Length: 64
Image 1 (tube, rainbow, N blue to C red):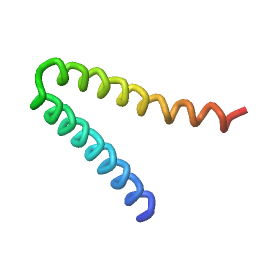
Image 2 (image 1 turned 30 degrees about the vertical axis):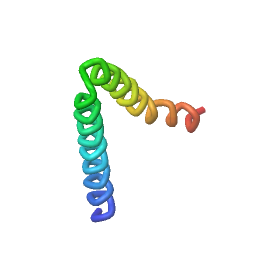
Image 3 (image 1 turned 30 degrees about the horizontal axis):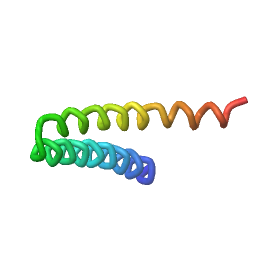
Image 4 (image 1 turned 90 degrees about the vertical axis):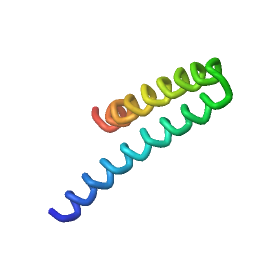
């Protein structure tokens, strides 16, 4: 039970720090100008969409 709780907490912190790192990457791009910021936002949206699809894609291969 403790291992399941720790795995849940680890996944939560992993997701939070992933989002924080994307926010800081966008702020860094903003320091170069608004065009770089919009490009960074587009890349961030793509990365989040790709990351949200990965669990669904990994489950397709395991089930028959």
